[in-house]
Image (cartoon, rainbow, N blue to C red; front, side, top):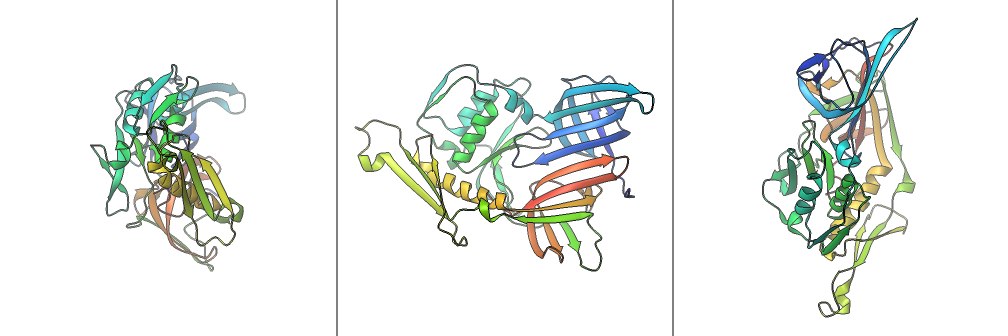
Length: 357
């Protein structure tokens, strides 16, 4: 059944608006490396080619800044001419770019590494990078800081980066080692930070047993196999025996989930050789496991709620009598979809707030 709601959406290329889509899928997810989009259009008047910069705007709000990866034009007697466009946000360029030389950086910190590696990515030298550290605003998010915070001053000893590794993978690995995510915003800004952990929920869903109104469908997954009682991060500090006594060379840090009943242990080797952030790494790994074990998905009509576009890294109050939920949850993923048969919908992926802090 086609829903009656209509949200305005257009593709902006070289200042020209392209509308009247036959179908589209526009994804955003805090835990995925890159956000993707695909659109099917009638034969457009504007020339569209792969490699072009694009912006996707929903209800007047910028929702994705990216580059077209692929175009497909086809025709047949029954459906006429169609034109398909697909691509990714600017994080896609970071994930595509390979480190092309040996990079040896002594006492490297995250800010230095990010500046050096992203400078090698085409079209991204102008992009701003935000570093969030320590100070939480009223929405429960870490504030961005113009100057280095404590996490970003921490050096990791001598780090050797070999050619053949992807720039995005290197930066994400480094960020995780100090308990952070690396993700992009709709305007193309890159962020090292954490998901929202508290504050006011700007969205709401209410599902009663006697009448489902707000949603088309919903499901809850609780996967016990994804969880561990303890996460242990261990390693050796880089340096010579003259600098460290043996007790200082080896380090072990543990994060424990007291709510998990089985004595099940996960072990991670810290490849960066610096115990200063190993506890943050252990905490992040445990929290990521909890994220992977609990997921709620809803399909809802349209692309907005409370006069706002559904957005990632926001909290949503869920009162669901069918799934037994009554709390605030983090929207970590959302996908805008439209088809001729079903109309406009949004698929929401929710989990516990404040993971990876």
